[in-house]
Amino acid sequence: MIGRMLIGRMFRGVAVALLLLVAAFPAAALESFQKSKLTVETAGGGKFRFDVELALTPGQQAQGLMYRRTMAADAGMLFIYDRVQAASFWMKNTLIPLDMLFIAADGRIVNIHERAVPESLDSVNSDGPVKAILELNGGMAARLGIRPGDRVVSADLPKP
Image 1 (cartoon, rainbow, N blue to C red):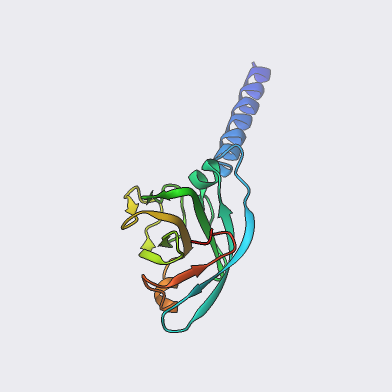
Image 2 (cartoon, rainbow, N blue to C red; image 1 turned 90 degrees about the horizontal axis):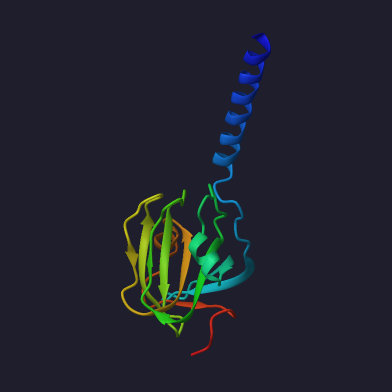
């Protein structure tokens, strides 16, 4: 009887440990990302450099910045599509507020969605066809005076 109780407790302890492990690592295999640099040039003459991760594959684009609790002030993620298209994002499993800069094929910022709400399932859409999206920490666009019409310069974006 005591042996069964000990085995039962051990089994429950192992089960709880496994559940905690699964909760700590929600995705079995998280994507890895290449790193690059880009500059946002504003109409007012500002030039702001960011170290970005590149989301190029469908798997990388689906994951994006999910599960991250922080991001450096000068960091971001650049999503580059194979073709120009309308874009729609949501914040499921994204834990930090983000500014989303929707970028046309010529590098011009089409529209900006500021401070997307963490874990929201609301759609965030481009105002037209775009080639790329740059995600920055929430509030960064306003702090730096980045506006639609400004330009993103990156060796990773094709030249128009």
